[in-house]
Every structure is written in C-alpha cells, then in structure tokens.
Length: 410
Image (cartoon, rainbow, N blue to C red; front, side, top):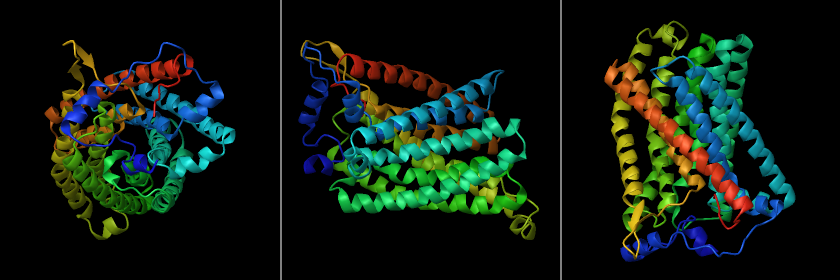
C-alpha cells in the first residue's frame, strides 16, 4: 500500500521499454463471467471525490459560454440550462457522497487522508466556485439588487472556507499520507486550486458590485491568486521534475490530468485582467490616484501576455503526449486505441476553460478580432470535448454498474 501511495496513484515508472509494454497491456481482457456488485457495494467502492470533476467542468463550460465573444440567439439560454443542470448534478453527487459515508463510515476518513482521492476533495469546492460565477452570469441580469448582495456574501464565505480548507488539507496530508513523489500526480494541484479560484470569482463579480465593495473584493482576489499561484508553482516544479525523471505515466488514460498545468497560468490571467477591469475609477483609493485604474489594466494585460505563452506551451505539451500514444499497433499489426475513459478525462475541460477565457480577455483588451475568433474556436472545441466526456461518462457508469463492476471511473 505504501508503494502505491508514494507514486501518487500512478503506475511505477522504470524503463522506456516497460512503459511501451504497459501501453499495449493497459486494457487486459475481462473474463467472460459477469462480475457485478450490488448497488450499495458499488457505491462504496466505485464512487469518490473524483466524480466532482464532472461538475466542476460542466460549470466551467457554462461560464465560458457566457464569456464567448461571438454570441448567437439562444446561446445564453443554452448556458443557463447547463448551469441549472450542473447544480442538480452537484446536489446529486453530494447526496451520494453522504450516502457512501453512511454506508461505510471508514470511507469518510479515507476520502480526506488517502491520495489520490483526497486530492479531488478540491473539486467539490471548484464546483461551488462555478456555481457562484454562474449566478453572476445567469441570475444577476434577471434579478434585483438583492442577488448582487447575495453573490458578495457567497464570495466571502467561499474565500474563508477555501482558505481554511486548503490549510487543513495540507496539514492532514503531511501528517497521514506523506508522498515520496508528490510530482507524480498532477491532481495534487487541486489541493490549492479551490482557494486560488477565489480570485477567479472576484474577477467575475467585481464589476457588478457597488463601488464601495469593489476594492476589498479586488484585494482578496489578487491576494488569493498570489497564494494559489505560488503554491501551484512549487507543485509544478515537482511535476516537471517527475516528468523529466520518469516520463509521462505509461497509462495514457491518466495523461489528461496534466492539463491542470494549463490552468495555473490560465486562471491567473483571468484574475489579473478581470479584477483590473472592475476597478472603480472615482472611489476610494482610485479616486486618490486617478490614473491607477488605467495603469492597473495596462500592467494586467502585459503581464498576462507574459504568462499566456507558458499556458499555450503546457497545453501543447500535454496534447502531444496524449495523442502520440493514443493508438498503437498490436502483435497482429492492427492499430488499436490504448486509452480507456476515466474521470481524469474531465481535465480536457476545466483547466482549458481558464485558458480559453484568458484568451478571450486578451483579445478584448488588445482589440484583436483575430484573437477573438481563435478564442471562439476554443469555445467550440470545449463544447465538443464536453459532449464527448458526457457520453463516455454515462456509458462507463452504466457498464460498471450493470455489466462489469471491475470497470472503474476513478
């Protein structure tokens, strides 16, 4: 068990030849006899925090549709439907999580202390972040001032809870499950991402808040983003060190998780530009420094350009690593798919939502029609991959629950 934990849940890395062999043998043939668990046992053994990657990604898609620079009639409605669907799914999965704990009490402790599942606890909070942003995009324009106040209250509650949560999770992990190779699993970034997304919420809501409340929200947003960015860069260093020593994991199905690297800089760009846009020009600090709002937006824009190329490089690196090993020849010379679907495939969506919105913001600030059309293409790709994930998500659940319970989503 300790050996499994030390690798962060990934297969042990050895030689290039062994990794190629594992690619061919990733999907062993299943026995012909049925292997089904009853519903209660299946819930206890197959359900985990990783399932909330579906809701954080679906919520992210609703946000990116609202931000899409080229809108058509009905797109806002589609985004609202996805937003409401995501809340429903989040409530359902939260109920299943509580049910799992009630069925087997030991899963409660294990879900917070045993990696890699414990890393994905942050996905629950990331879903909450997308819900708050969804309220801002789809609720505030159709409601009274009371909802603006409610969103602000939710923001501060989220900020306090996630700061405490990220601190407690770190202490618990170091005490109960220290890792010999923390860079072996990119999902470790989720332990700080949910606090870092406080900055993203601030960027999304600050422009719609009364001027008296904008500066505190901006300060919190930039501060939380700084905290999240610094800790993330420590983890990113470990991840790159692990990649240079061991290469990408042999199981190519887990490689989409490395898109989390894209989100570190992508969401930072969103926070910098989004908060700078919301600065009140004639109130408080910005009234005392009349040029501060304009200077802040200029600095945010050019700092974002500085970060965007790194974001693109990470995106390209992970994409190439996935598709380069997606198909392999078997012993008969026939090409076959080497990947099977797991919840890590939701990483095609959520980190790249930050990348897409950051590209939209840069296109708007630079007043570039070309960049805005590129970002629209990125939105379309996100929709395609989300539909792909939804179909395989439902198919894998049905197969695991009704036909062969050895099939796992986690």
